[in-house]
Length: 459
Image (cartoon, rainbow, N blue to C red; front, side):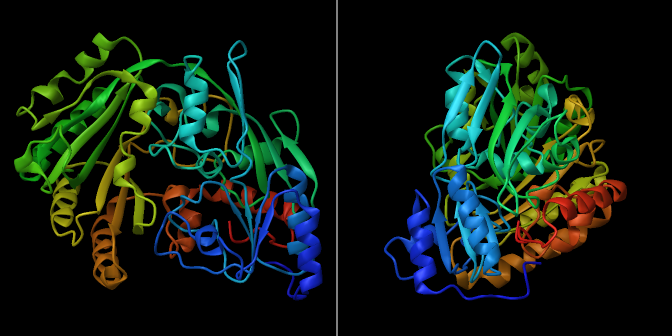
């Protein structure tokens, strides 16, 4: 934990901090404070003492030194999209990296370097300008830093590995204000930890990625009425069992949106959708998905060739900023009739039309450490379940939280381990389930080296 001696900063010291950084320092009485303290999850309602909107690594180092000297909790904000709300803290200092959004792409060397405030929409656009990409988040407004540090699942993962598997170098400001570069032959322990071990080691200000040739993909979704969900999941499981590495899919329970491509009779109705991406020859993608598209047939079929950036923003509308979110998540050991029945029956009782339940297909390159050992755990998992409770009004908190917990209680015996990026605010105890015991012990030892006082305990 941060120093037990909390030295409340004086107005003079705060003013001095504001003059020392090149960015903007926001106090609770300042214009813009209300917007600056809010994050994606509308349930997170925290009031930091100071928000430093930094613009360079020097700003980050100055802010960390200030927070440490005064015994303040420190939170580092990249995209602010994490469901647990770790990007903001009460009565502490938030270091907001959103002003650090520079991107450099080397199309010849097939690498990209991006600052910690970059979001996936920006990085995808920059790399796709050269026909290149790295595995990224499924929502374009997600920050690159948080997703990468936790592992990083996405549409390209079964072919090219997790986001963290494609990291070649990270730049971090430590708890004592030093700039450290971590790569395979420089600070190798830290390099191992930062690729999948979460963000509890320091403030990562820049990440360099290995890129892959990706242009048009065969992608989209098919949508079926919810009453067919059990049969659809059984078919999807068979598809996953035989899928090539080029294909990554997600089975999703949701309410059909009032979109032009959805029949009006289906608007607002519960459906099960299979969303997917095939990297490679379009004809091969069509063949890999042929049985799924013939089944029924689906109410909606949007599969076809599309730009990768279009796929990367296709699900954005289902995750609006400010939605109240409460999640439970874990890796499924299998997807047999019992698990399918539990998922279908529990989903049918969801109290909110904004709630979604996702089953992520894992495997492929994820199951192999394609670029050397990383801290990411449970690579042998076949599926990742995310019960993504979402609703609009605070008055509905109790009902939705209770439903999410009941669903989790029913399915948890079939799970083994957790994905750190999907752990909610009351799941800190499950951090141990995100890693094998030996890896967790190593992570804590590395953290003790780089942040012995627990300055970054909120991350």
